Amino acid sequence: MKSRRTLLIRTGHGSAGVSSVPGLPEAAPAAAPVEPEPDQSVQPAYTSYPEPPAHPPAVPAPSYPEQPATTGSGTGTAPAFQPLFADAPGLNWAGPGDSWSNAWSAPPVAEPVSPARVAALAVGAAVELPITARDIELIRASLAVVEPVADRATAHFYALLFLHHPEVRPLFPAAMDVQRDRLFRALLAAARGAEDPVALRAHLGGLGRGHRRYGTLTGHYAPVGECLVQALARYAGGRWDADTELAWRRAYLLISTIMIEAAEEAALTSPPWWQGEVVRHERPTRDVAVVTVRPDQAYPYRAGQYCSLETPWWPRVWRHYSFASAPRPDGLLTFHVKAVQAGWVSNALVHRAAPGDVLRLGPAAGTMTVDHRAGADLLCLAGGTGIAPVRALVEEVAAHGPVGGRVVEVFYGARGAADLYELDGLRRLAARHPWLTVRPVLSGTGPAMGALTGELPEVVGRFGPWPGREALLSGPPAMVRRGVAVLLDAGVPAERIRHDLVGELA
Image 1 (cartoon, rainbow, N blue to C red):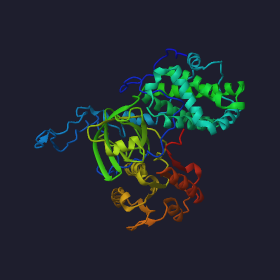
Image 2 (image 1 turned 45 degrees about the vertical axis):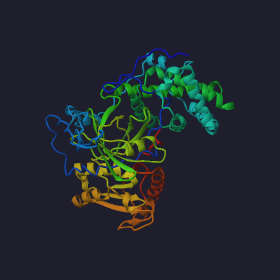
Image 3 (image 1 turned 90 degrees about the vertical axis):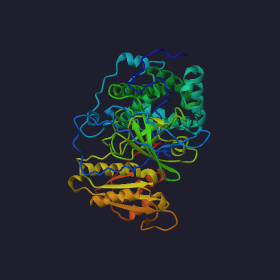
Image 4 (image 1 turned 120 degrees about the horizontal axis):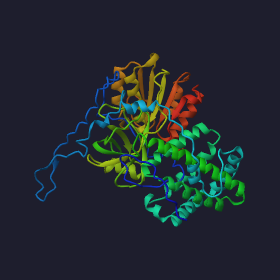
């Protein structure tokens, strides 16, 4: 079946056409590889936000040492490295007072779903909105049957898609194992979250905006939905009938409509992806790199958020990393990356990336941000490179000032003292700001060097109870899950515990 010609979702600057095609909502962050952190080398002394200039400052061109020559004689030096974006205009301003930052507080304008769009998205028989409670029951029952054979079901889905639409195969990663896993996780999450339409819409809207980085076409959603229904029908067994099929078609229409609308709305104000030149690459430990990137145009984000990165060495493979500093006047972005076993992107960023390499960045995402008007005391748990968004949040609090006498307590954990490479920078911040307390925690063997000892969640529990706190967690998934349980026992309400577990957001 050939996909009909439909309108290309507007992509704006930075788009080079279709670079990938989505399946169902891709599971947001991929847990293991999301290891970002703050930049030790660039530490702005935040006390309050500076008065925004009348015009955005130009992006300064970084300087680089002379590089050894690689000619036959092996003597002399090569010309100094020339940054790709040396002449970039002052578009990289992303701070208080600029139009990009103001856009964050503006509520999105909901547009009604037009009959033409519904007709374009319908995959087979006529469907109706909204999805019903009976639909949810049928979807969950069929998923319970498909889950034990998820690998075969998702492999069959992609086989159908590539067989009937071979033109899309080159747009996917060469290795499909991770993509298959993401598809089924997304299905489960959508089914489980269908009873909370507000949260579901917010999440699917983020996925729709994020899928713009693939160059997604509106017309891709219909064939993807048709192949999905066929794959589910094959593996749902006796749980599949006409009512179940109609329920899935309704659900998929709802999902795709939300994603398309969010993508079209985002296309009015921002590009689908940014180019970012690596301008600094440092290795505080053997397996961790601090990567500083200069985007080619304004990049709006909040401290505590993350974005997806694509390297030139693994096309169409994206991984999520948190921003390691609050927005800066020079527009530079910093990420901390830990090389993980079999991590294609993380190993490339740690062991291969160098100044001059150009990455692609998806839009900022994530909900682990702080409301500076509330002034609630903050309790932050950060494990390993999970210190990155926490460091950024501390900088942002320092910039706004501790509203209402707010205090911030940071528990920073790792196995060995060498892995607490951001500790000195945090202690310098604590020395300038009495409202900030930093407690290092070591869980491995060896000298504690003044740190607390034990597993990070349990150490935090020993200091409890923590009533009235707003808790933020970042780090390995196991640590975050255990930390949530400890905080609940220590008196922190569930609605005041926030994290962005990469890989479990769909």
